[in-house]
Picture 1 (cartoon, rainbow over the protein chains, first blue to last red):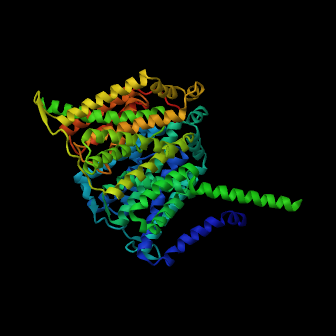
Picture 2 (cartoon, each protein chain N blue to C red):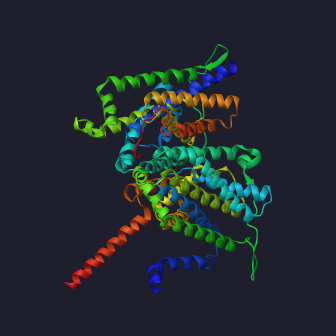
Picture 3 (cartoon, one colour):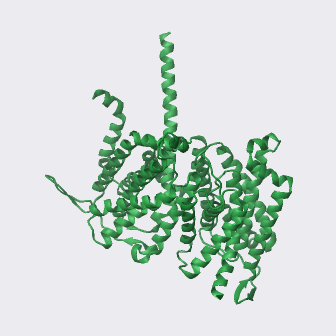
Length: 331
Length: 289
């Protein structure tokens, strides 16, 4: 137990900080920014599963986020379903669409897959903007209800009208996502994902069904993208086709890459740091995106593993110098 | 029947501009293996250069087109040296991401400098020709004519000149090309220059017909990728045929089925074709890419 605590104290500290954070953030605006960061972290984590751990750059991620968002919007607002039914239904829908679309798309590789999924994302965007009866066209859907209250035995009713419960709601789903992805990537199946990412032909040669592996990863990733989208629609209250836009996918991509691809912490750090950074860069306004473009190029050239890679490099160096110092002292 | 012919004409016009844009992309993507995702933005820049030359500096149409092509050819070299050269040996999607960075910079820089609104280049050839019951504006005929001229010139350059054949040599075998004394860096730069120069010409040709705006490049860039994959990586005939096919799919699909969904037909065709042939229509097996 002590050993476990010692090994994981840092993560526990982060968790504790996340749990008490709402007590310190009183500004409504910042609170909203942070809740959204957590929400986008779910989307970034799921993109990382397919792009990082499985090596397939899916650029339809915004599209699947949008399927979840439109799913919840239509089911709760138009059809009057309960949120807690609509959310899993929408996430499952995103996963199912991922399955159907993945069957042809995953036959392609590398850049081909990236472009195929980019086109799929664009198709979803165009449908969202043009299917008036279902999606409300370019005006989108306004007035989506917040998540329905839930009964907690012994504590009474918990409703999600205010920001603090919304924060914990998102935090809960982020932790759940993290838990599933942690178990998945650390399992034997997770290793087959990595094997497929590193060398698909070799993985196939040692008996891994790479197609099925990629498909599973794609479906799980899209399920969580849909989940994040569903929560987003309900918390924001209105959606438009822009949730399906390439810009949304690029945001997720940026969080994953700048945070650190193929790590579990990286996408969360990215999803957290970048919006905060943007808040500080508000004064740059129009130049913000240009700066981001430069940042993206510099990071991909000089720090291809993002923030987590940089962190690992520094900590490795520190460990080495510590070991060196110890050895010198022993002599 | 007349409607059909009209749509075919429009499709060929659209398709021939797609073909020129895709030609440039298939050269850098198929030959240098650089997925230049910012290709559409170079196309957009070409249109802007042309626009400013005409409206602010009083250039007439053809000189503006030529200057724009040269400017963008230089821009392509700069892009290659600053963005793609450092990631040339990095595998996977790294070059793709670098290109994405370039795309974001270019598109937003244009928004910041000249605003998000659209502009129109005055039409140099407003005349209209009626033939076989279809209406053809002179500018549209010109687009088709110049596109075919460019395609022929490019073919002659690559197949018949020493300089041009170095591009093919690098495409076939980089090490071998280096061994026989071909400067791979120079060939890369030249290929990029041709590629973005062609994109600029295509943009200048259609600019009098459509509006120009900062976002005009992203969809065209995406379509160019679709065409390149349809036609097979690095295949010049593939890019031409693919461009015309996509133009026809859009024009006929848009004319008969639904104008709002015309892009869905094009992208849907790509997904369908890749589902049947994962390496494209004329593509060869690709490895580890």
